[in-house]
Length: 153
Image (cartoon, rainbow, N blue to C red):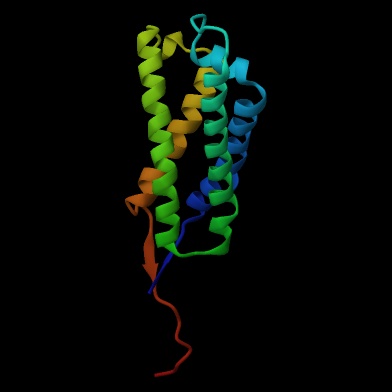
């Protein structure tokens, strides 16, 4: 018995998430002021080394996500490995969403009506892949299939 990974999960994890992660990494490495301006709308102090340290670390996490999903998962159809990878990346997604909730709450921007276009893009992407990860880890849509043994009865 083996578990077939549905096409929707392959599409999200192999083809959608890696470029989104690389875009996030690019922004963390090369557009740090923009990233801070987006998250701390009109309230942030001048960027300093502490900000850069955290942005570089976040960018590194995004590169790791892209490698795990875009490269490692192409080497195996082992659903256990896929679930472990998604669980690890889910921790990053949940930490990001918790941080957004805290920062937006402090700024009075929890209502989607208060979000900027960049907020919508980041939150919609993160929530979407988070839902896909949780669904996959929970086994939603995963079906065990019997392998043909090649023997005749």
